[in-house]
Image 1: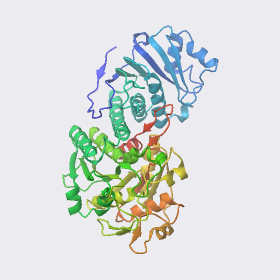
Image 2 (image 1 turned 180 degrees about the vertical axis):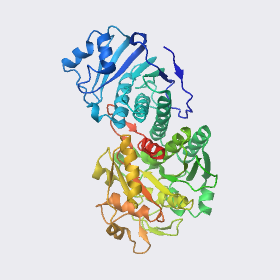
Image 3 (image 1 turned 90 degrees about the vertical axis):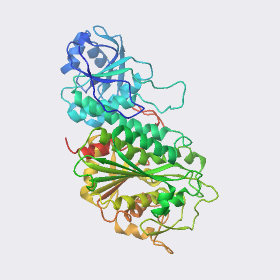
Image 4 (image 1 turned 180 degrees about the horizontal axis):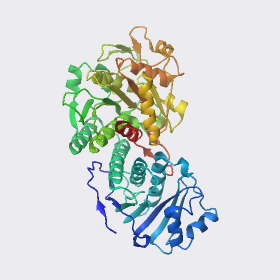
Length: 504
């Protein structure tokens, strides 16, 4: 059985060693530590599964008949040393009813199997794709397998997850495996950045990470330091940063995939990069502050998304802008009652220093508005109110343009990222009107907080079709799930890449 090594432009330090595509020949020629099969409900006697069942003396039929596995989504059953195969174990992973199998299901199923196997060292793991899957579905399965084997334990000497020496996909096109590996690189990059300790990842080092990734993928990068931010009148970013000993940064990245160098961006990606959020003088309690290294998840997602888009060489002009700050309580920290003049000239009353992300985004959105993009997307862990409304697994969508929102939502759902649109009625604008300045940085009371935050951001996009994605829930898993360890999830990286690629 010959192997094809993939000419993949890899960029993530969290990548598995090798991801290969092999044509399927004889089942008895497959040699591996583990062999992963995807099982649908009632699918034990069809297709490749039936062939493997026959080769193993009917072991799959017996396992299914005993009720150990039914094929329901994400059931995972190992069969040690199956007869008739040269593999250490056979992993059966359920993917539900055949007619309901989609890319999101395959991503999570492959990640579940991979995470299970990554608890031990594996020199080689083989995954079997189904001939009925589309190319995009195979890509997501490949990505899920590569993400599932990577844990959050960056600083542990004894790792809970160990990457496979080699991952092989049989019955899968080489290009689909290549693209899936690149998508996984993007997700794993975002996860690594989110999982880094805040004393290791702060505005300067986040900028250095962005520069390194830009160099690997051919993305242009422009860095605004504190002096440049002052010249550009980015006083909202600077105000949030005043309480920290670490200076803020704004990073602008450009992928020129189509047309002349001076062409306006097709899409501007904007990310919140608050590398640690203490709440400022509106100090968070300890339990709420513990995971606040995650508050740069939107920025990590946008960096990872544009890097993935560049690595895939997608023919679209994309700009990404990330505002990077620490929100701390130093002697110069901004205060309740302060009035900030944002870059756009809008004046803002500060009623809560823990509503800092929208201040940072106000200046970043104004910067990208000046680049005249056709569309804008921002992603941010912006409000606990969105988690109250939608839970931990669903991102909130807010927009000024329904057609644009529908496209973004469709792309997210196509890859299994759960999103839900919330209203943006004009009445909510009344809640952020200021008494002594144009607007204030929180609404009236607790109610509708995710919406009033989005209405705040809307003031800075100038009518350009825009969508705000509040990822406060899905950006970080506080507890493990079958397909992922706790920690950063890489939320919205796959969705944005799918959006830029367009429908299959």
